[in-house]
Image 1 (spheres, rainbow, N blue to C red):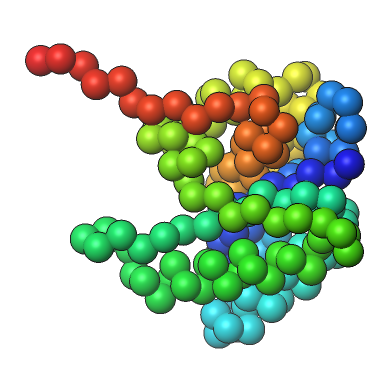
Image 2 (cartoon, rainbow, N blue to C red; image 1 turned 45 degrees about the vertical axis):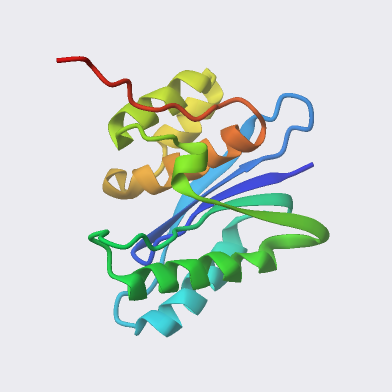
Length: 168
């Protein structure tokens, strides 16, 4: 069974695949970048096409999706475009495959990105860390790290955590 993880982004989309049916090892990961000169509507198609060229067809895909929350400092139009990109990833499913859309707090909890990425690295074996460390450019590797985290979450190797509140 091949399990995929996708962290959609309009600058860079992170992806990962876990193809070992027993160990659920991360076997591939990377980022896909769309052409910067394209309007967002065309960039979504471009990114999805590029992703199809590098990611294997999956039995199950976990995709991070965002929900607008009133008062958030995020442009709702960007969230809509990210979710359209997430939906376009369905083309990577095998005919009988399943896709799950997961909100960040469901699989990451409420930890800061740096802390969460450290937790992901701790869950990886040496070979898996080498796959993540080989992703270039390093400035965009965090997208693939999130996709790896989604695969770990999907296979039960990573559980969400929340910040611990310190008493004053």
